[in-house]
Amino acid sequence: MALTAMEIYALLPQTNCGECGTPTCLAFAMQLANKQASLDDCPDASDEARQTLAAAAEPPISLVEIGSGDRKMKIGNETVMFRHEETFHHPCGLCVCIPDDAEDAEERIEKAGELWFERIGDMIGAELVAIEDTSGDADRFAGLVAAVLEQGTQVPVLMSEDPGLVRSTFETVENLADARPLVYGANEDNWSDMAEVAAEFDVPLGVRAEGLDALAELTPQIKDKGVEQMVLDPGGEDALETMQMLTQIRRQALENNFRPLGYPTIAFARSDDPRKAAVDASTYVSKYAGVVVIEGEEPWQILPLATLRQNLYTDPRVPPAVEAKLYEIGEPTEDSPVILTTNFALTYFTVVNEIEASRVSAWVVVVDTEGQSVLTAYSSENLNAEIAAEAIKEVGLEDLVNHREVIIPGYVAVMSGALEEESGWSVTVGPREATAIPTYLRRKAS
Ligand code: SF4
Image (cartoon, rainbow, N blue to C red; front, side, top):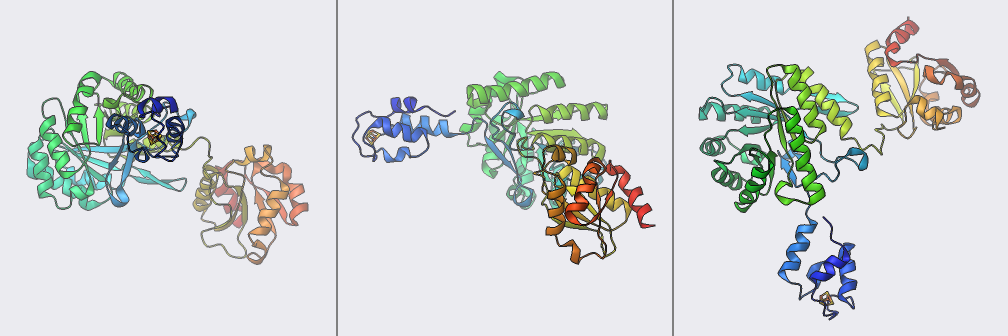
């Protein structure tokens, strides 16, 4: 939590010696508060002042890095309780959990590797695969962790409470520590040995304790063992209690700057009913897990969670947009239809998906509407006949097609006459809903 200038001033020597380059300690404190100076410039600053300022500069929720290279993900370092206050910065990780005594564990790892989906231009899916030590067989456990690592589509999570087994896995599986897996984890009984393993291999550590008080007692001790990056599991009897504790952890960290709970969290959606597990998982995505673990590798279990997460972690102040330009869908020729739409990402990708489904190649003119959808853009004057005509002209379509017909969204049929006048093109009113595009285009092409 940032300190005020007066709080910083109270920590300074108050001799006004001027050696920091400012005439008074108060002026220097004001510079420090505005992050325009460094305490290193004051030769007489006490150790207490240095420690207090360093602690104040730390984020209230630590940033934790899991994975490496292309698979690196960052969780934590959130600054607000509610998305509308600013934005959420680091999307939670989605983790598929596979017990190592499952006969089909290898096939399930393979299946988890396919849990990636393209949505509005981003690849979304499960970033983590946890191998759960349910057999006690160190070779089996290490072999499955190695399989996740070799597959390369997800980062492994070593889920075991046995520090010896975790250590032997790091020693057996080549390059495992470099991949920076999450180890889950430490508890009230094994924390000392588990912290030593995590510190030795420099990997983040999941910490579980029954309730917030127990967690708050454990984390400083684990930190003293050299583990800076932790992910907290407060337990919880059911989804409601878990969500309440995840909320408390976030609140304590953000509002009270309570360091022992200033870490991202991990939550488990376990249920005999996979539908309930999916619903519980969606609760944890919303409030406030850093990693959500779910049993099951079916796309219907992961895709809705990944979609929810993508929506939650989008900056509400910036509409998702694509570049405004001419797009070739399929292999358009000089006879292909020309379709006009806006650069709101959801609109663009919906339209493109439907054009692709029609199997009719087309030119798509995307107008810069500041990321607004068709009707919103039209009502805010970000889409009108003048702007659409300018977009058609700018992309150079006249040299690419041998016709002069543009199809506009059905919702802005009202601007067709004005657009014909502005552009000199013949305007055809297309469907209102994107779902009607395939039938519309096929009919037009026949
Ligand atoms: Fe004050 Fe330190 Fe600056 Fe001297 S060098 S004026 S003691 S802040």
